Length: 297
Image 1 (cartoon, rainbow, N blue to C red):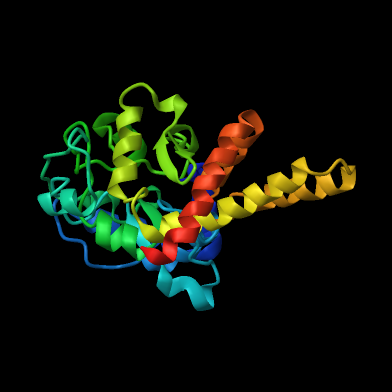
Image 2 (cartoon, rainbow, N blue to C red):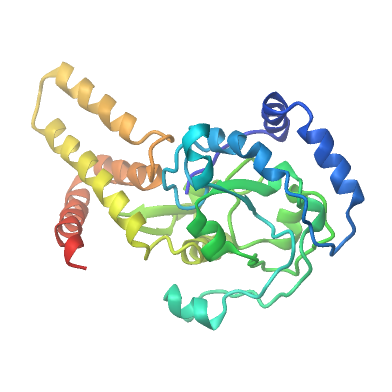
């Protein structure tokens, strides 16, 4: 997971540039709503392209590349309501515990609540996500440390009062995902900057909630790109030619740019290689072994 830093003002400007009337319509619809009311007028898909572009065509939670070409990729992505609009269920259920292989000491949220009705049309309650993260895993779950405040109207203040376990990657008001979750090779883990509570638990829950350490598609996608980055570092170590070194460093930077799928994983590996190359080489051996045995799973 990576962050997509943007101010609320700038996000609203992008939405207005995409659809000059959307914010006005959203405000009008919100005024009609009552707390606990089911929201059935879908307008959020109209601004999906804004989030697709902002997120470089990637899922906000797992970083799978879904694309940002409106003519081809729109159908692959869901507009995820970060705080569920029609109800909040306890997390995890026993079925999810088994499916996601959750550790027994993982924090849980027993809260049941009405949906966040007044955030149904709030631009800071949206993210573009893959269908696995949204429909299969997110659903009506929104685990929080404190009781959900579903009558709230401002995601910024709610983040402080509810202390959600899940990390919202868009904007500048939640924790920085890259400073909260990092990677050891293929596997996501709490970052060094998330040693204190509640950030440590937020990292653990977010990783477990979206199955970031157990989904084959994610593991395989990371492995392919880590293998490429690792091979470029090997070439870099084998040459003393400045132009070749410059070209290889540029290729590594491109591979690890925010637009690349799984860039959080790749950047963690690059940092490891530059600080502890021997450990990085051991990680690369594990990656290559994973790729070699993938078809046998």
